[in-house]
Every structure is written in structure tokens, then in C-alpha cells.
Amino acid sequence: MKSSSSIDIKNQDKLLIAQIIHLSSREVFQKYSGIINSNLFLFDPNNYLLELRELSEADFKLLESNIQEDKKYWIIKSDSSNIFFFNGSTSEIKNIFNNFPAGKLKDAVGQVLYNYLNYNLNSYSIKDREFIFNQSYVMGILNVTPDSFSDGGLYINLDDAVNHGLEMIDDGADIIDIGGESTRPGSEIVSEDEELERVIPVIDKILSSQPGTLISIDTTKSKVAEEALKHGAVIVNDISGATFDEEMLKVVKEYPGVPGIILMHIKGTPKNMQQNPHYENVVEEIYDFLLERIKAAENLGIKNIFIDPGIGFGKRIQDNFEILTRLEDFKSLGYPIVVGASRKSFLGKTLNLDITERDTATAITESIAIKNGARIIRTHNVKYGKQVCELLNNF
Image (cartoon, rainbow, N blue to C red; front, side, top):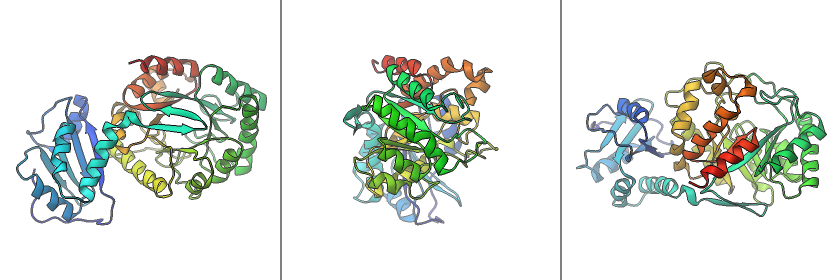
């Protein structure tokens, strides 16, 4: 449908959002054909949608004046959002917008096309280790907590925790992710001091034994992150996308050595996140959140950003499957994707499996995630995870 001459634009100051959507399956096509509602929108798994959101009146006029003769675009208007879709190959999208006048619209489309098409060219250097993201890596989970959903209480003892961390290194873990506060559904917050008492001795002892180990600190507290970085951690894994503690990004930015940060999406808090979560469009809502958090980190000059859509964190079963199916749509953000699906309840509920029986389902899910763009898998069973990565890295 083409837009009318009268456009009521609200939220003029919002960030213009561009996203490449791969029409890789009939389910994705059907979702967007219901939104676009046009018989000119045809299924082709080799085609894409360019979606532009939060458009201003000036943006609309620029779009219409530059692609008037093309029949492959649609404009959807509502009180809450104003959206433009263009259906075609990435080359068609590029050619259309190459002819646009210089400005934010052309820049936004050019940037997401670059991000999407060059996704596998990303590389980071962290602690003298080169990560080339045309392949995938394993992050081993080490929960030093009494109440984590899978391994709570198993590694609360210092020696047990350290031995398990060293065992995961021997099994091929590229990164060890250490957490001192459970983030399972319904979990309670622990104090900074208690969290520090749990994680810092483990970091110290692992690094004294294996100095080259890359350690990630799984925390939402800036004080915990800062101390962990001082003791040798090189990545901060923040399930809130650095929203629970406003100092988090500053800590990462100011710490020498350019550590990495994983910005994850969560709906709500661990305490309430599974109390009837709801999305109109789960992928787009997560995408918009991650884009905002990326901009906040970039504005501080932070490097080595990773993004995580937050499987199981305020998501319904169907949301988790849609995220995994459409994982490559997050490539438009331009940063390596982390996926943590290990032993999650959506696998157990789908297959009627106890936590101790979910490692095979986890490995299958991680394989799908890697095929769709995941570059780090966060997992409990490092042996399985390493096999998955090594096998798929050869394709």
C-alpha cells in the first residue's frame, strides 16, 4: 500500500531504525505478509525485506520521491509506529539506495547492508587472542551459586569451582563465564559483597593455574565487574544490556586493555521475567533494544561488543524458537551474536526432558544457532559444544 499525503508522525526525535530481514522460511514470509497485506509480496527464500522504522515525515517524502516507480515497497502507518518495507535481493536494496541523496536515511541503509553482508569479517583481539568471527567459539558456564537452575550448588566450593573451570578449559572452552548470582526465573538479588566473595577467588585461582585463560564475568553490577576486571577478567557479560546499573558501561570504557562486553536482552528482571511475557514482534523488539544499547556503548568508545538476544530471559517457548529461526536478522546490528540455550526450560518443556537429559537437545539447538549466525555459544557441556563448533566451522 502507498502512503497518503497526510502523515501524522509522533515521536519525531526517535532513532531511525533499519533492519535486514531474511525471508528464509515460509513462517517468516507469512508473518510479514500478514503485516504488509499485499498480493504483490511473493515468497522467495533468496529475497530479503529492508524494514525502516520510526520514520519522520521528511523520511517518507524522501523515500516516495526516490522510488516512485518501484512496486516492491509498502508503507505502514499507525499511531505508534511508521514503517517502510522494500522487498528484493541485497543487490536491489543497495542499488536503490545508492541513488539516494546523502543523509541519515542513505547512511542507515548503507550501514545495515554493510553489517549484514560483512558479518563474517568481524574479528576481535582479546588478551592476545585473536577471534575471527567467520567461525564459532565456546563459552563454558561456571555458576558459583547455590541456586542456578542447572548446576546450582555444584560449584559453590572454591576447589570444586576451580577444578570444573580447568576441566572445561581442557575440554576446549575458549572462554570461561563465571557468575556469582543466579539469574534463573524467580531468583533473588544477592549483595555486591556476597557476589564478589563468590567469584573473585575463583578468578584468581584459575588464572594462577592457567594464566592465559579468557574469563568473562557474568554480572549486572558495575562494582563486581570492575573488581573482576582488576583480577584478570576480560569480558563483562551483562544480562541486562547494562541497564540495571548505569555505571556498567563507564566501568568497561574506563578499564585499560579494551575488555569486551556482552549486551543481552531481558524483559523484566530474573525475579519476574517469566510472568506472562508478551511481544508484538519479538525479534524487532529485541533488535530495537540491542540497537539502543549498542549506541550507548559506542558513544562511550567501547570496543569488542557482543550481542545476545537472551534466550529464556522473559521469553515464551514460541519466542525462543522464533529468535533461533531468525537469528541472522540480528546480523544487521554488526556485532558477533552470542547464544545461551544450554539446558533451557523451553527445550525441556518441548521434549518433556529433565535438566539432566537436555544436553543432546542443547547441542542440536546450538548447531542451528551457529548455522543462523551465532559466533559464541554459552554452554554447560563444553565437550558437546566444542564438537558442534569444530564440526560446523568446517562447513
